[in-house]
Length: 85
Image: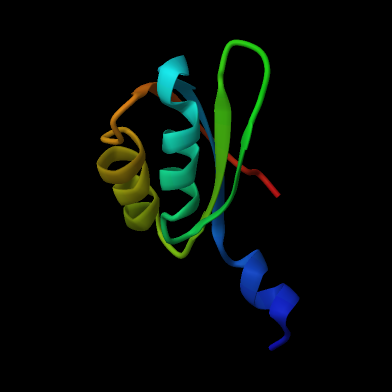
């Protein structure tokens, strides 16, 4: 099994976050340190940043979103979008 096949079995999601603007740098640094967050960047628009998450199960995704991302100091709200392909 090659690397492409292994990664294609992962459950992927884009998590959009609204964050307190006074501590955005601290929040994004924390997000980038979370296991299974493969990237995180600032964005312009109704959301302030996003985190791309790649996991093996829905339980792992739920843990990251509910217990890690939403509980970070400064995170106001999140919107999770499953990646379809």
